[in-house]
Image 1: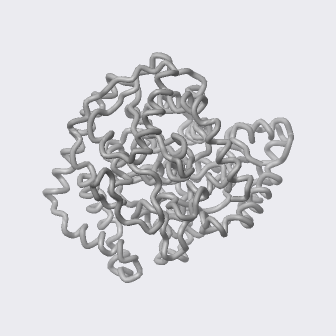
Image 2: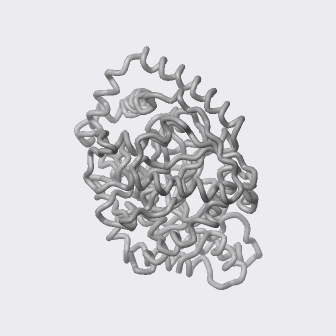
Length: 457
């Protein structure tokens, strides 16, 4: 059984199945198959059935609004009342929050059913799907490829049809990169559009929360529930005359040949749909990775200062190295980075005054093999972590919304992502552009992904 959220809700309306039946199907599937994927740290079976029973009672009384009966999951850095929330770390292996994160409360009030908490990179420190404490997350497309991170468990769970949606977090690309690696849709909304209250932070000025789903319309449905804004209406329009910006610098540089091929194919498909492709000057973008590192690394050291004092030895070696770097960043460097951020926001906003959306590949490279630390593109070596966020981290710095959708698969059969970016609070334009692209470009891709799921991963 493979359904979209819209199809699920229509099935409820037509009484084809009940929330309890749907919940049982998903819980059974997770128990049977997730040991091969390791996308969940905690399965909330009892909570899920309690919520399913409540949903059935409401449906019996004629209530079919919101997300009633929709099974979802959360990245394990998002607090869930009375449910284990580890942030992927042994330090918090026994942590039970006494209240929900605001996003959880909002979606539960909309009627969603909690299936469990998704595996992740320790405290969201990394962009791959490795976890030495709870086990690595496996990419459902290929066990030898990374699922991406830090929301790797969320993306893998949605790709494997273990959840219709997972809420993840994104500090430099941690929703969009795993969405790209796993062949699903991932949205980093406008900064502060979705409350981060009740989530373990990484960098408060870069952190965003958003949905990972199986298609564009599902992401719009989840965002409607979170914001009460009519995003689904944007999924019914075409893009004839829409101005799509194509970066001339930085965001189109030094990419893998297969990524370039798929990206150019996507540009042509958007043009065929009637979009107007306009080159935009992005020559002002330089050293974005270092800027993100200064902001994020400075703040993460402060966020973890209490844990560091008592439990430094329980962090991974990589995390400990990050804290050492955090202490070495000066106030002058941090303040200078904040000033540069202001200028970047202004210049990017100027671009969005001239175009509706901008497009880039989600990552410059195809999904890497597990345990990869460095990649070489066109003879140039680059740390894997820097490379994977080269096209995504800018929009955490500036707070512009960005949406990753599949762009097809490589010759090896591995997904690649296409990133749409818009002006602040213009998620509607992202949904409009991405949904139109999805309708003409991704039917075969989704059939492949569904076949993967039906083949029991």
